[in-house]
Image (tube, rainbow, N blue to C red; front, top):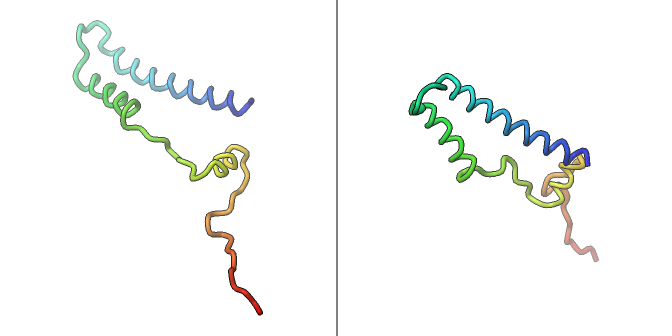
Length: 89
């Protein structure tokens, strides 16, 4: 439960941070009817990346790896173990 709460809190902090970044850009132009092009461009580029071109930062190769990451269990890399098929008579 703590892990879920921490993940949610991290997400909310990230959203708040981006909102404050955009607020600081717009605050300087509070009385203007139209925002300057660089401010609009900065905000629109961020939302374009966030909504259409973003990908996960790390894609786990398997559900075992993602479970291990959550539980902080060390998983040996692929190929760390080998199986011999040699038959001895």
